[in-house]
Image 1 (cartoon, rainbow, N blue to C red):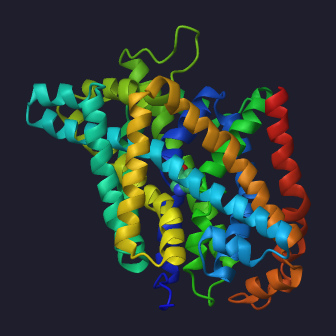
Image 2: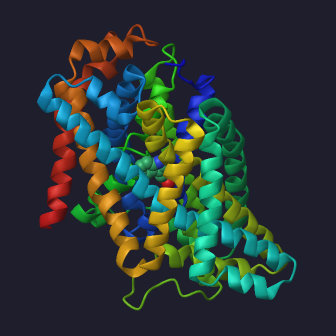
Length: 448
Ligand code: TRP
């Protein structure tokens, strides 16, 4: 086998993994979930779960990946210990490939909307009313065209491979994302109405913490760290043995949670600024508008109210969303593509083309049956599959893989790991605590 590609540096890995983690889940999902779950209480629970539950699961993926140096299917099979666990490995691995692809199939639709709004902000600046109104109204043609554009960007990067594609583009795009976000926050916080939003975002009302809120926060944490489907596993497999996995995993978790927090500082106050300018931010039932309407109806009220600078702010905002989507979508596509290239020997270009096209077709089917399929695919993948696959990965590390071998792997790049708090807590943690807590939250939600 040809020598396997790797990230060229620690920073390259952090950019790529943070790029995967930071996406629509942070900038859109987290703030809207926060807003519709009563504000700061959700923020609090989310942070606790991100570190208590998602970080240990992230570590499981990174360790398996770097040890096996292979895609999720092959990696899980390689640590199986008999025919039964081998079957379980195949089941979990293939489910990962499918779920990653399905997540991309809805994610690319939403990302396509971001690009169409991005271009609409340009046509606004040019005074092309007709173009703007086509770009911002929901039509099948518009949706398919921008879906195709976004998929082509994603495929173009993945076809270029690990260092020259994933790492290069993540390293270029992530700093841009941060600059755009900080600029936007400063602007929004200076507006009338922002203070009310800030208060809701930052002052927790602990009576709001209910099982449904905990479940939402858990799902959000898993989605945001790209867990369960083998994304972080494959990124771990491209990491050198000189790096400390617990440390890099912690950096990625902290960066991801921080960006979610910062995005909340932008979006939640922005909702209330829009309210100040007359946007209807509550549904008829008195709940805060969430979902697509938030981004595509409420925020434009805000941009419109700004006069001349509105189009520039809109441009910055949708550019931010597009970039964040792209560094995430490539990490989804890499999951099936790495399997196809490693198992069938197909070239990266060919594998990317075939799989990318297949996902594009699935997305198109979703668009044609939007009401029936869009929400269903999101729920099936993110609410059900991701946490269950997360449990499987914890089971593999905690119960199936030999503890000595786990230790041997983490020791690489972190020689004194045995004397750290991490090694005292984590193994038992992924073995008992994580599966039990994930399943309990899950069952709670099904019966509740
Ligand atoms: N974490 C990304 C976000 O917050 C989305 C993402 C990328 C993802 N790769 C994934 C989600 C794999 C689930 C599985 O937007």
